Image 1 (cartoon, rainbow, N blue to C red):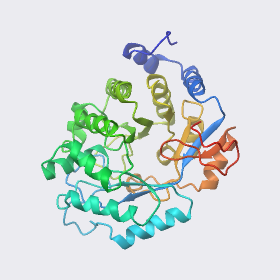
Image 2 (cartoon, rainbow, N blue to C red; image 1 turned 180 degrees about the vertical axis):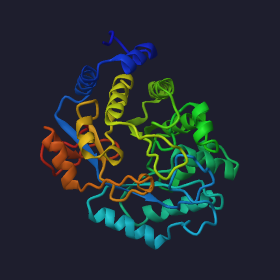
Image 3 (cartoon, rainbow, N blue to C red; image 1 turned 180 degrees about the horizontal axis):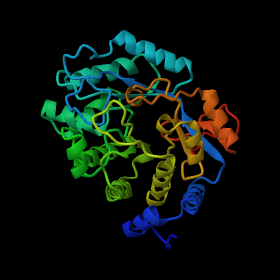
Length: 354
């Protein structure tokens, strides 16, 4: 099915469109085992904190945002922020994921102050501000993206999430999120972050108005950037959830999700980690994803609001995640954002990346 060496886009297209489902999954699992030969599946204990839902993008796929001045709009207070972080730490969390909308009235200093406030009080990793947010900050302030990232790093930013990628093809982005940054700008933010020593993740939201060619273009754009920088820690594909949005589509099937996941593992040969999406697909399909290329079960999601706004709300405790992983025949290990294993659990406890 795969020639020696790397998959090119023609081979990837043929596999994606014509490859038998189960052999494709087996090839992806074999590729996963070459990178991670120990029978370990990782997960991270964290919380998604949406510091605000105010956004001027108006993306057609988003059910979460509210326009400025809306009766349901909010910006979290410091007290609310503290409560969420303290609960996260009590539950064994090691990081928070913070993302918000494109708020037109908050200066960059607001985000710097928020980061400094958190870091001065809590020993927690801050994984925050997707590339579209950073581009938006740079435009509001009239400064370069590199300066925005440098200032956020100085204030306490530890890593950048891969949100806002959707599909990294501008013809698609112009239809579903025309006010959000371009694909080139998304990639440039990540390259700049990597050059400044920040690790980041990469995502794909698929199943809305893109084609197979668009999905492949997205994967190969990520692979090319990773070749240059090596700064991505993981890739997380997830399916568009149409409920309560302005895009009318039937949700992607489990087979469609697993096929994309397997192709991702095979194309992204320079990504160490591929994450299953139990938040959108549910725990059983996420468990099956562990045999279609995924080696990570993602976050415990102590709190999640964006996908829930689209009518999908799976919830799993740490114990449930560990049981699902272990019943699939793997050892469950908690990790950091950088995929370092945390000590004090079953297994070697050596703290090294699996």
